[in-house]
Length: 378
Image 1 (cartoon, rainbow, N blue to C red):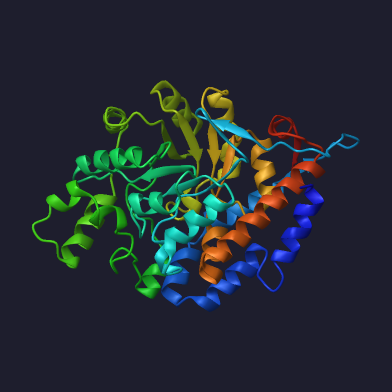
Image 2: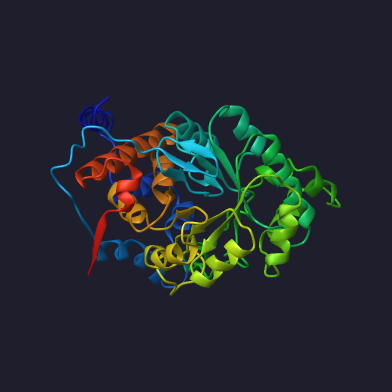
């Protein structure tokens, strides 16, 4: 199917439905209560980082090349020994059930249908095994929050992911404690305290066997106690390596010196991310951090990009700046809130087609040529 045919198909599929990020957010706001909507939409502090994440993309302008035959396009990318049809991943986002009853099941099934690799969060509403059973044969990675009170829980979860056929472990390192989130304070809303995001914990034998009782109150308390990890350090990551044969990526890298350390410590990949602005306000935009990290890594390990991706042209800019692939977060959850699995499918299909069109109109025919594109920085 040609790019034009795909574009026409996307137009037809999107009739009467929200298309861009602003429309998706507005539709989600109508569908959700203030607490869940505010939790998904908001970020830390005065949301300076949230705004930077998107505004900084405007500083980078694609300088397209013309008179190149772009009638064919190959967006395949090989990461850690696996080849994917396009460089677009689903970012790890937890507690999806606050957006829609089907939660991660809907997102993972939509991802499988459209061949987006899916990164499942530790705090999913559904377990590793439930997601795996519903998405057999699809590409999945597992995002891990280190368990500060009981590291054996971490080891158990990565073993479960490996047994379920997941292809990589993504360790998030920027959540040593919860960011200062004023919207959640204002709404008095915490998904974890309300019992969401338990899927991987209540199904974990190590976590459950350590509880004095299995009451909901105790489970919630222990999850929250486990999830923030101020003591996390490189030694813990070395320990994690001993409990899985899967490649390990670190999510949350922004400083080039941390990127160099990751390479030196044998980490298999990096995800440049500031957690969508949800942790520390006043942080550098992820897109502004990307070039220095790419330079520091110098092609030795793959670098994925996360935070602020809102449309296909954003993805092209990140790829042109050296990202191996990009992760999509909030747009997916807005699609889930406004339309369940079908809503997610529309978001992913539109995003994929806009990315493909943007690559072709830039004059590139494959990802190697995308990474050779020139960007003008204002």
